[in-house]
Image (cartoon, rainbow, N blue to C red; front, side, top):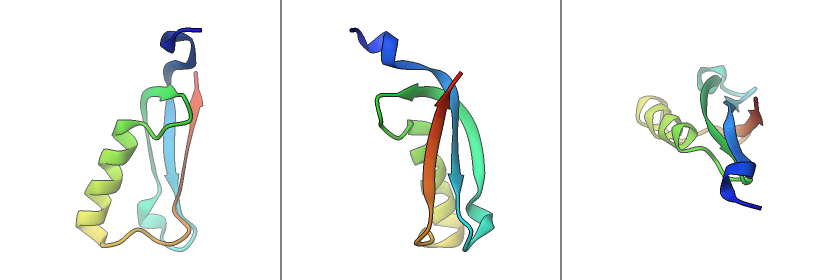
Amino acid sequence: MGLFKIVREGSWWLRSEQDPRWNCSGSACVGGFVQPQECKDMIKIKTEEFGDPPEDLEWEYMKN
């Protein structure tokens, strides 16, 4: 099984009930049970804007 079979275009999202300012989503190559780089980049941007992430922050993705 090659890398191309487990990584495909899809959507990612961040979710927090404690602080909805962190709720966002985007598109990226997703798969392999790893956080997409675009999601990591958004966490960095939000951290610079709002401070440390809320304790309940979750990320997920779904392949198209």
